[in-house]
Image (cartoon, rainbow, N blue to C red):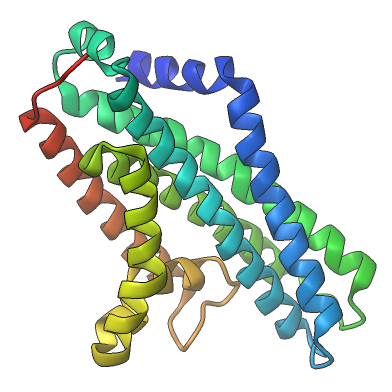
Length: 241
């Protein structure tokens, strides 16, 4: 398994232009949203307001990490490069797990970078009191954990849907449209859906009365379940070159 993880990490490193573009877009989006929120609102007066701004910007920026995982996994099916991978490693679920872990590590990097650029923006443009050291560490931890889990989630969706466009579009429609609609009728999705859990884990102290750690556990369960589904689908599906 360690060898497979190294191979998947090598793929991300050797396609450094693509990887760099996704990381840069994620950072830029986090910076832009933080800046717009700070400049457009007159109600950011407390350290908690600062954390809420940063958490919201991180959540939006981490969608780029999700797309990165879905595009990479779907691209392997679309271009037929998965054939050689599965010939070298016939136990396909191990490949899916390795790819999921590799993109989780990329998500950690993206989450950490997003927090740094967000904090830089806050330091330059916010007049509210600076959050405490403990809250800042929770914010950094939440951003990196959220990045890891959402990166793996993107790989899972790419494995299930195979087509790049379907994986990206279907995932975004579900998270931004379907799940909020379900949440308006079913409290579970409002509190413990994927989108809600990402928002909880990406904000120091949690959100809507749900602890940050609880959000992380729920998001982990979602990710593991979908990764297992993706591995199962890939195991049963005919592989075409």
